[in-house]
Each structure stands twice: as C-alpha cells, then as structure tokens.
Length: 71
Image 1 (cartoon, one colour):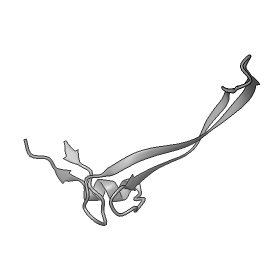
Image 2: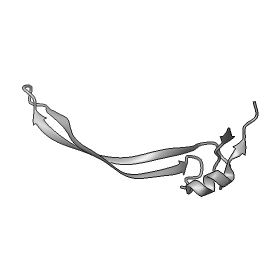
Image 3: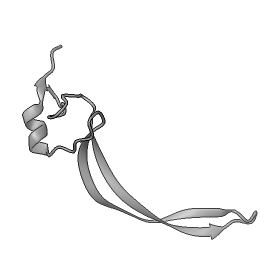
C-alpha cells in the first residue's frame, strides 16, 4: 500500500471531500419552534484537498506523489 501525500507540501493531510446541498422544509412545532425536515439532498462536487497548504490536486497528481509505506 502507498501513502498519499500532497504533491506540493508533501503533507499526509490530504482528504477527499464531497460538497452537497440539503433542502429542508420548515414545519412549526406545538411550542412555536421550527423543525427542519430534510426534503432533498444532492451532491454536486467531489475533490481532494490538502489541509496543510490548501492545494486541490487532481487524482493523477496524487498517484504520482504516493510514497511506499514501510511496516
């Protein structure tokens, strides 16, 4: 197995993100408070991002920057 590292700063803190939007329908509770009921969720973007330097590398860049993990 190989460890994925950032192609720019070499940090191991590279994560995969999925942006989504959630549409919720408000309803009024007996006590007068709102409750938000989930109505629709849609994913619209997936990406990788380094938490150290903020770069958003492509998959091919991550493949090229992978390093061997020693046991």
